[in-house]
Picture 1 (tube, one colour):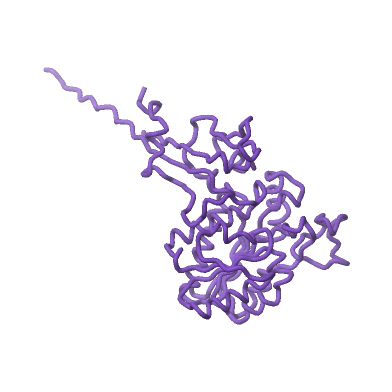
Picture 2 (cartoon, rainbow over the protein chains, first blue to last red):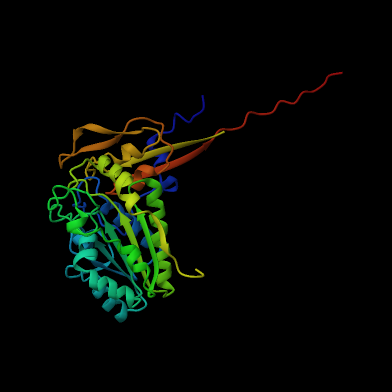
Length: 262
Length: 87
């Protein structure tokens, strides 16, 4: 017998063997999100990228209104709170005052795709050099699950109890495809955080977007298709299955627009 | 042959028991405890030694409560025996 079995916790759990740890750019405050919510993973991945790039002192975030309204309690970087839907407008002001800083907004679908559609589209059309993180869970999470512009056809919510009827309630809004047509937009991608390999791809997407912002290429949008277990009335595992089976076929993952010639 | 030993440390007081790590683990190393933490959630625990430190559980954890450690142990190769002809 070798001495492999003899190795105890103290021998393995040392700094040199560390494979994964909570990034220092996240605070120790416990997150208020429901169990299994994708917001926590998205926060974590974004902050990992910030830590790895070493830009925690040079980045300014804009928190939205919605479930992620307390993002400034969890992200250990400079943050600013914006009025509902106006995060892109606030980020525009910050970026123009501090052009050398990195600026990102973190918005949900009710914030970015419903009340803030005008601000988002015009910021993208002006080619503002900011990163917009768009969390798409197809529902208004904070206000207990009303129908959002991104709700899937036939999906049940509290204001569409018989499923979304596209004849009367309209079709879901695909913000990423919409913004990708605008000339000021440099990078649009759609990712998810419900499985480990998707989390890795999301991390790469954030790193790319911040790199493009450093080079001043223009507006970058990273859409994250995620879950809302509480308001979909599912367990976290069931909600992740719903993301795989229903959300991703409607919102296909991948890069929608990349800068020409890299 | 090298063997990989993985260990995870779970911050049980901040775990919310969402079971995403249980689902993501390819070696079924994680399970949900019968007891609860101060917030009333049944937290995740490590239940066997098959962990290879693949980091899947930590990547999907929404609350970043899992730290992963991996150590590669190389067993010494068996010494080669030279045959010496005795004439």
